[in-house]
Length: 306
Image (cartoon, rainbow, N blue to C red; front, side):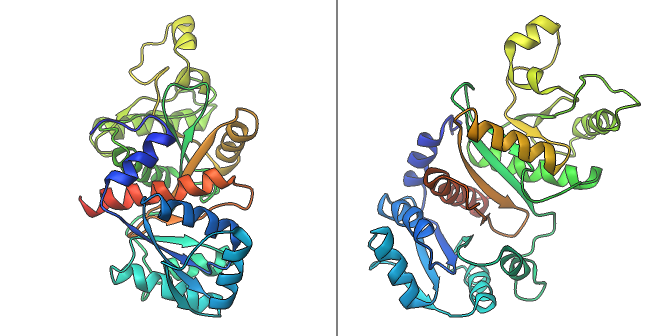
């Protein structure tokens, strides 16, 4: 399978794959319904809408979309809707869970419930797939939204989650790095020491099918010119597929800088549960919401086949 190199190719791939179904929790939100409807109409996935039926219909009318062909599960309470969504995924009636007009805490509580949720064995983490105008391929970034100050073991889990997404979009051996402010281990900069430790772990095969080199500064990770000027010998420098950021502040800053200053579009997915989860931001563009749903469907298809 050829690697997906931009978000338009991601959409085309979704049309070619067996159709996945997204369960939208509290789907009574016009922007969410607009993105879901577009994906369904383009045969990129199917959907089941959970929430108050009259409000869902009203939101669809406001968005100007036709939801007559979609299944609606009438539920009025947020907690019950979230539980119903996880139940549909657990029972195989849906392969992706999406947050609609519901408090994030209520939504994630249902996801992580040990009895009725879709909690996985690992760590929940946010993986963004960025289509930046000035970069020559898609760039995966973790974690911009979920883990605040992860320790070494949590970062290892975050990387594994992101590698799964990379594999799902056709990158057999993603080139990955841990972004630091210096490209050599330095005792006074603990993150560089973590990066060196991670490189050793990758060498032992603990990160799976990945080419990992770290630490690398941001310029070296994505710029072949910087690599040449600084004379860095690295299989990842200048051509990174995947960036691990040290904490949520740096991850969130890079993520939003690429969107709001560099004109990037993206899809994002929460990994670490038994199935992909879509947790979009209110500030996300309509295109990014659509791409997040489509990405989750592509990842779900990959997970079903592996």
